[in-house]
Length: 491
Image (tube, rainbow, N blue to C red; front, side):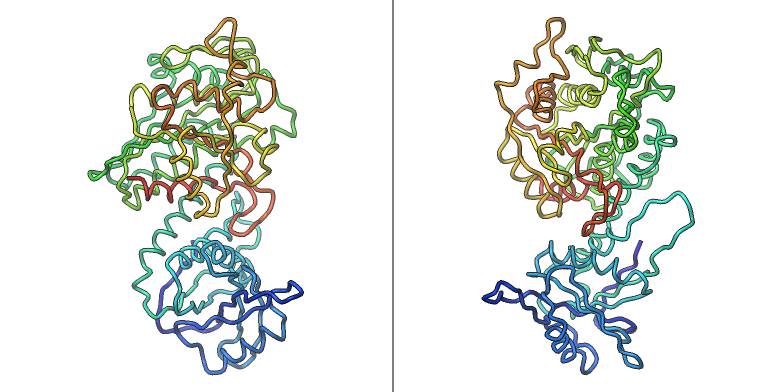
């Protein structure tokens, strides 16, 4: 990962980056820009040169705008003017991401930060610098960014060390979630995923791991996980990861859907829809990475993370449309669509959390429905909760982290669609509002934690077709940054 130093005196000025902010709009609606006074002055003449360039190049100062000025024979050899918009955290994150991509051919850059820069701005910049260059490749071929070092020029570097450390951990955990999600399913069996969790958690104190295999799942009655995983030669698992610091006052359970590959089962998907189904465990990746990150940051909140892991395959032992599944705790589901499998494994985990763990708060993240993207597009998760305070706090954390979510309704008059003639619940109604109905189904397993439960359907934003600010194409690691922000404030 990119090395970032906090310094007060520049010792290497190959490339100097100076911030430019958006100024007042003109009567015609065009936005002008102006250089930002920096905490540490650059070499003589660079400030005046930047002022002249802003006007000559007609810069707007929008976040991520970059203008490069070559200066042969002088120091620095290149002067980069970096747009930071209005200077809030989101703008700095976008600026850092644009800079990491634009300067990828450089080996080292120095960024002169404003005199009154906030910790939030430094965090945003650092996250953007670290997240944008991410690429997942299983080959050594291809060009890699040359940029290996960035210096942040400040008058008081020590005052921002914790901020940069938090941003670095957040980026590292986002990378972990992206790696887990991007890994091809020929490698990513349920046991492989459990092994990766063990490796990630190995050196962190107060972090305990339990992995249940098929025999334990059968003995304890996890019928949903067993049904979905029954068609695969790679048996299902239930990972339980517990972070329990001595000073924790609140217990949060995080649950992530972990379908390591989804063929749709007997209700098989078309090829085009199946190609990217290695991402169907992005919820599990997010909650695991957030928990490991919380342990690394020593956040004072107890977290128990559950990831029900299964491969939904087609075989003679696959569960059938019309089967009745008995979940943990005894509730039964009639399923007529084996491609609506995620809710079946989540139901087991939710019921177990409510009955055995009895947390204060219960959250689940899942790449649950295609209806998520139909309703909200490709960048926004659907959030469901009956708890206004909990919903508001998670939405605020997501906004601060630069991840998008939108609260959706839980219409009570849709509950009748969950009625089955032969079981307690019908798992996959077809009356429309697919994301809402899936959330309503999950709610049936929350018991007396119904008013302290929150569900995020994050199928759409878990994957990006192209680069956008700090998001790189492929798996996005959506949810890690939001969860770490939210967990840091839970009390």
